Image 1: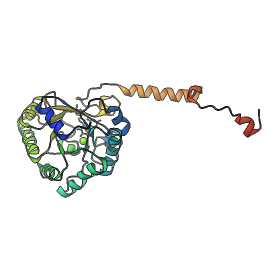
Image 2: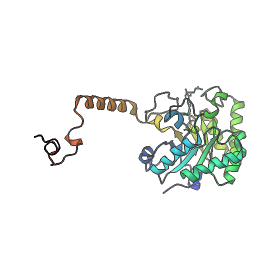
Image 3: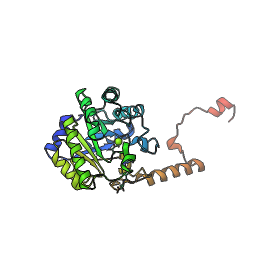
Image 4: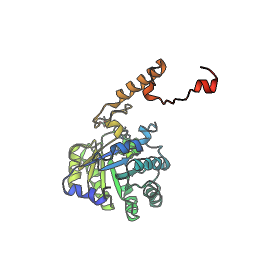
Length: 278
Ligand SMILES: Nc1nc(=O)c2c([nH]1)NC[C@@H]1CN(c3ccc(C(=O)N[C@@H](CCC(=O)O)C(=O)O)cc3)CN21
Ligand SMILES: CC(C)C(=O)C(=O)O
Ligand SMILES: [Mg+2]
């Protein structure tokens, strides 16, 4: 059964932790569905993880829709959140609603996510009014990381911490149903979590958040370009993948793959019939 918005919001009230992971394709979302994870996020991190871009900035709406549709096909019963890419909500409420509704109409997403604080509150309000549930995202906001001086921990002094608390409150008032807190000190995340009534979902924001999110390829140990401090590798697939691919290459080249076990047979004597040979 697909969770509802009310189910997610109720989890904070009842003190049950919310688990979220990214998913980018149908094979993975199919494997992940039924594991108990409350929400799948089709993150614009797919630009870096799946498409080889250096940042999330170049990711397009069409790329996000393409991957969101795949995730939905693999996990018809999961709560899926589509990450609005850079440029899809910065040009005004009208564009944000046009793009946000695309995630629901074309990819059957349950909600969208977008980055930013006070600046995006009018857009959050417009989306929610239009019927598009919104997850907010503050702290380290990768789409504007260049303005933050890179992928750096945010809210490290009291002034910046206070700003993040105010942003969280404003986003709640604007109608967001949850807030992602990325790369902020754990005790600041605790204060934000106690201050707002909607769930906080942390990534590099410590244990006091109402939920957690990670990039699936990071936690499976199959993304080795960089590893943020907050990543815990629940598996180490990279060496397994490399060993398997190396072994396949060896066996193809030495003729030990395929064997009869992996081949199809027929009683027809093809050599005699087609080549007139015995
Ligand atoms: N594979 C992957 N995982 C992610 O978590 C992720 C992406 N890609 N792409 C989009 C953003 C970028 N993210 C990042 C990337 C790097 C750091 C990082 O290296 N942070 C430093 C903090 C340094 C500091 O300020 O002390 C770290 O050491 O973790 C954090 C988040 C999170 N998102
Ligand atoms: C890291 C999460 C929160 C995200 O925005 C993404 O995967 O794009
Ligand atoms: Mg993102």
